[in-house]
Length: 181
Length: 441
Image (tube, rainbow over all chains, first blue to last red; front, side, top):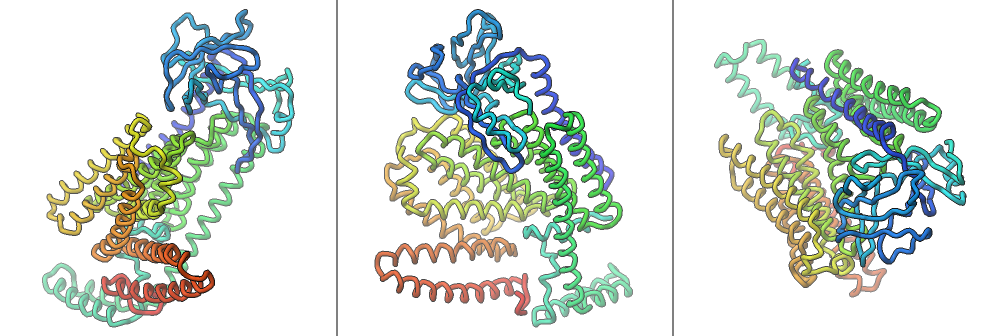
């Protein structure tokens, strides 16, 4: 191998490692610096994956629209039309806020008055109802422990959200207590 | 160690080497082999007379070429066994470490598990480098290098898992692909090229498939796959006219041809259009992202073809087969767009068009394989010829003949066709010098 190729070989390994560290650093930065929000989930579904087990999380804010009956009576107003693949920003309240209701779903980034918002991608849009994925729909658990979460009465997810609306899961709250894996 | 030695058996196992240097195909003495030796003798004599090589060198070359083939061939088979064992060993060690980390995921501090995974990846590359380029074990080194590339992918998924990122996302595959493709070129490994191209195809198909999640129309996904096949093949053509990267052309050409023929075969069934394409003549249903992705893939294909032409004309390599090859790639691109936009309100057009395309691709692949001495292309063409023939037979006879009779006649026909194809394949490969006439061909 020529010295030039040797340098390139080392460079590509460095790039691979930097990519992995970058992925870790980005998620850690959200967890450390992000604002906290607690999201209500609706029934979860344990799945086996070849390298472990995870539960699929569907949030109250996963399906939004005029025809969606929200169990807690919260209202979500869709501002504008959404197509598949579009970004959507859902305004949220921070923990402890007096107003527990999410209010608006819009295509553009909310203005500064929005206390906290989460960014997702519209995966389907039909008859005024949209489904959004936020990149926090999977929670990996030790093997055999997925059913504990499935059988719980109430599951919430504590997330950290950065300034641009990207969310990272911090913890699962199962029946009012932080779930320890 | 020179770069030539890097064209090792491990890469040949991937079945994609375009070089005609696979010594295994040289048979025990046959008319073809002896003709070749006579030719070599004449040439070597001329080289000696013109002073290019010395008398000793000419003797050495002739002695080397006249050596019995059997031990040489056995040696190669042994080399392949080494590669298989080394790859299996490396994969087992890797799988052991990954499953240990995955099973004890929650018990290991995050910094430790990250250090463990990344450290193991770097160590794998280090060992592979030492063996392949320093210690003179190219086969086992190549196998471990391949494992290192696989390890990078495993690490991408494990890091995503530890932060609860969706692992059922094609994006991770695209990152994996981008991480290992340059490595394939740097260490001249066709096995890693095959891995990268395979990951790219799966990632792109997955990405295109996400469009169809909530739609009744899957046809644009097939359209994108056809366009991808054209791009991959066009990139292979570009490799062929660049001396430095010619070594990597095989995986692109074989994958492109296989993907194009495979997708076209699926599209020859009328039911596909009834079941999946209910949005004919409805351009409104084509999303912006579909058009953007289709356009990007088309532009890449056009650039690859354009560069191939420019470089070919510089070295005077444009020829009738190359024009025909380019025309077929362009036709595949056009039909890919037809599938994405669905401009005709009738299934008839699509079924006829894709049946014709399949015939063209099958015979075109066989013809190009023969003309350009690319054995994998000949094999792909012949395999799909038999599959298509069997399919059409079943379609024709299923309503016409009694079931048992149809099976018996069909079975006999298949055996006959199989025998005929095997004979034809041997004859073709022998004619263009890839194989001898021995029974092993």
